[in-house]
Image (cartoon, rainbow, N blue to C red; front, side, top):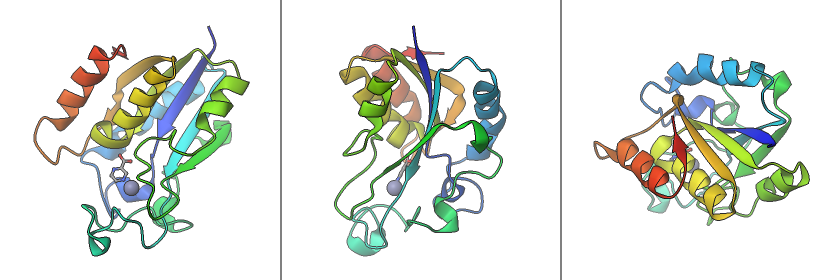
Length: 179
Ligand code: VGL
Ligand code: ZN
């Protein structure tokens, strides 16, 4: 069994002081680093939300979100506390105006990187449970990977109360291990 750690969008704009802070997003830092440092994973991948300034999800383009994770901005950088020296691959998503990018698999090399390294199982941590974590984990399941959601290492936005809880139930129903 070859395993990858998938750290979703743990970026400055999604934590306190950022453009689209996920409540309690910072709290996952220790868990993320603990998993990185465990040496349990054959491959450590970080995804970044990576938008052009006119991304269609931004309010000024008719979308739901304030502008966030604009390519090459400080807000789009990975959280400075993450042990980035042990991240093997960084995958950018949502990199064109019309690409949602909620899934780290959408038009990226994520699947081919996992296949190249013969990965069977992905453990998913990061932000946000009800958006990019959810979509990325669902795609991983569809592609036949074993998927583990590490609840200590994820936090959600909960635009509607309960969104994150429902996402985890949906993922468990689709075959993910939630623990
Ligand atoms: C995300 C909202 C907008 C996420 C990205 O990473 O979950 N959420 N863009
Ligand atoms: Zn985004």
